[in-house]
Image 1 (tube, rainbow, N blue to C red):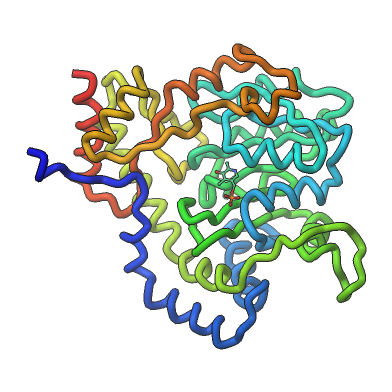
Image 2: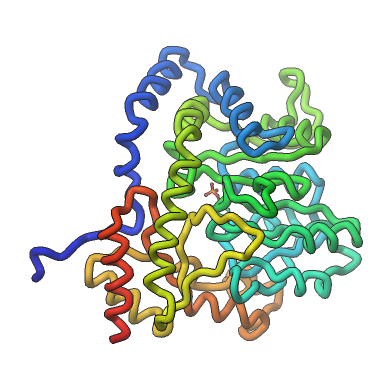
Length: 371
Ligand SMILES: *Cc1c(COP(=O)(O)O)cnc(C)c1O
């Protein structure tokens, strides 16, 4: 049987490249002819398109999702002596950005079902020093924003959403990019809308904050060589703006395919030893990842790999237990849900180009492990 082993990679970006290749190469060619590489007309055009897509007032193209977080914290003037509440079950950049501006990340445990920050755990973490909350919309589903905004309102806190994995998701029919003061997106190639390299975005409905983010993006400079703030180089490449404009037209179609793939998995996993991801009733998930909870996760992971099925663990270690955060003083047991998730989660291939028989093969290989 070895020779007939079906190989299914965890990501396959080459599959969709064919769909938009001609148009992408065309616009890349135009950028090359213009020799305008850092910001430029394609970035400006993309900002308009993505602003309309999100249905928000302002969209600012930046250098990465990580830089979007950093810029948002800088725009809110969060720094030394301040605390920012976020989840320990997320990608490193969320909490690292808080530390990078000199503030202290304070964690609040995750929710068992949605994997997102548990709003019921946030308020107990608020102190005199708290300045902001950063909910993360993990795997494609928006964290529950109504309670988050209520807590923020009661205590006068800012809200920065980490929407890196949730472009196109909605909650109560409202597009991700509109709830908090600032919303951060990533166009890392494996996100649902991926650039040809690094790129990111900040959206906001607050004109003053938009202006500040724009200024901080270019060393706080306006006009040329007059620096009104200390910012940095957070510019988006013109080439990325061009490619992203081309790909944005496909995003909703790709997201629909991901959702269809999730339905197929859900059906096969119903009543099985693995737990399919739970989408909350007011959420429309765009499944950046399809993340199950699996008994004997590490064994299953090895079994899938041996059988040619790609998979990944997002995330294997909660942030409060990361070596670089030892100074924060957390210990194992502090966030039991996040810790449990880290030992049980496994993400399966979910990209739009998967064929039905491939999805069935992945799911059946998972279930065969438990026979
Ligand atoms: C990808 C990601 C980021 C960082 O985005 P980059 O563009 O890779 O810098 C931040 N937060 C979350 C939740 C992410 O998934």
